[in-house]
Image 1 (tube, rainbow, N blue to C red):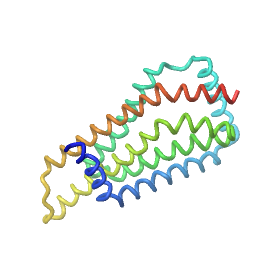
Image 2: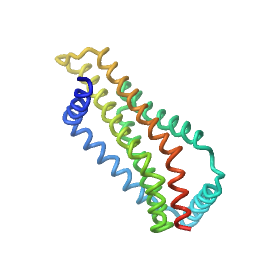
Image 3: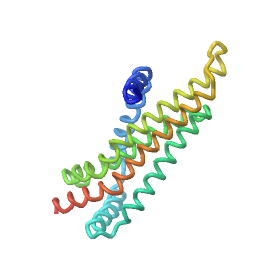
Image 4: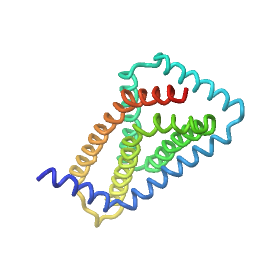
Length: 213
């Protein structure tokens, strides 16, 4: 019975908050586009410096000199958990509501800049490298970020309505429990993303680097 209810709950959640999901997805895509555009604003010396460090990293990866998969796993999990943790706090605080939008936009901007820089500097080689280095873990991370942003914004809006619209009655405790449970589920998803980035992505990158020569 519970297994049947879970897809129904997810579907109902997406339907009820479809406008928020659309808005946040568009905001994220705008961040990606802006990040790709920012690449063109860099000076030649800045691009050369970045590409030098990037080339050194790829060389170290080919030689097996990069940090261990375990370290990548825990670093990625820590970073992503802190990121959505800030969103969670901003959702409760209400006054931090605009910062949730800024954080999601910046996340998109970082991804757009990374992919844009690799493609601009390395053409098709950069495209394949960005495909295997950015896409795998972000297939999980991006939906989690967007979902957490939507839930945090919705929680904040609900709290604002409770404060200023007296006709709105919704018990705070159950609402907070659901909010915390959703955050816990998001952390579980980020564990999967961190595992992919630590144990899968490096091997994909090594394979592409060897293939490209």
